[in-house]
Image (cartoon, rainbow, N blue to C red; front, side, top):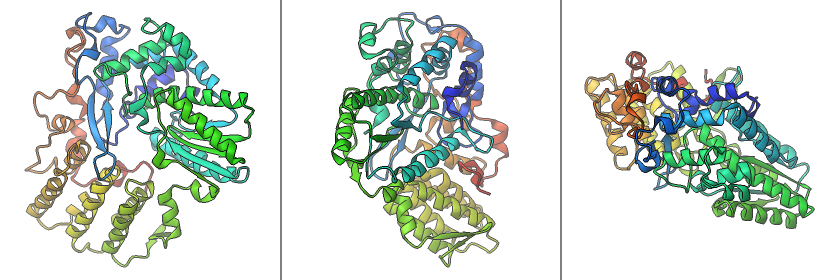
Length: 507
């Protein structure tokens, strides 16, 4: 499996310009940003950032709403993660700058200086292979192989494991630290704001996307993940160099984005490594998450995520025999109630999503009638309320069950009940997008408030991105409404296929 650093500058450019990498949100397939990106690519061409400005004295950092933001619920309470659908003009210009021959060569060189025999970084964006459904799926497969499986192997070599992550990593990255990572802190400080330098250019674009803010970088694109890796790789190199000076060499660190697993045979040395990591990150305005930090001797058990371990320890709900999946539950309702209880204990977990996917597979193959589908829908809605990461798969299941109701009025009533239930919580743009996938073809569709939904519904005067800073000649005919492929939208039935929401081939 290739990482993006193995690509040429030309292939890296094309990789970043793919719609699925531009926006990493799970969206219905009729929502695609390729036409917008192609328009900007052709319209702007070789023009520079300064050349496309409407007012040379007014930068995009002085405008609000340059990126389109969605607040994604992280849990059942009040935690949200802001996801950016990047301004296509700034995104294109930034990709173009990063992937010039000289800059891409320099980025590769800088990453080579981060490499340490004691630190394995698993989170450099991956290029999907012929067996992978998507680049995102390739990254998850890589996590399983190189984090979970590697932890088992390292349990033979090391007695202790320290597990931690960074609190609000992307929201805490100081944009100026990107230049520190690319040039070194001292040089970057001396050349702060100097035009033409890659680190300063990236800093400028980051600020342009978020109203001049320097604390935090956007989330929601593979490009932003890659920029975060520049800063985190810089931290890796500082940790490695300092430990070498201290004579600490018998350790191993596995890092996936802001998640760390540190292995060592001496508890005192492991604590010293952990303290040093804390110190290095603090100098970059980053803090370790005390709630997710632990030191353990039970490496095997803690190699697995808690949700996966808990499922294995209990009597599993499902077992596979050949091509068939069997359940210990006697009814569909029992199956879902089991999943509901698991969701209460491990909301948003990978195991929960896998259980829901397996349930969907079994429902798809079921020959018998489904009794009381409205009860199953009610249970699924409660699962989604507590596990926002499961919105798409839950609504896929709901779409199948809604179709089993007898009349149109029954279907409309229960969908409105679902929507009213979710309207009790703020910022449900992502959920609206998937609910619209179910209801668009209905004669009385719901009027959703999310801007992407309005574009899908051809509502007038929608502004997804604030492009006021762009000169008129570069935005004449800007195809904002073409983010929705209308013929594909129109040919979909109200039933969502599992293939639309699953990262992996299911059937």
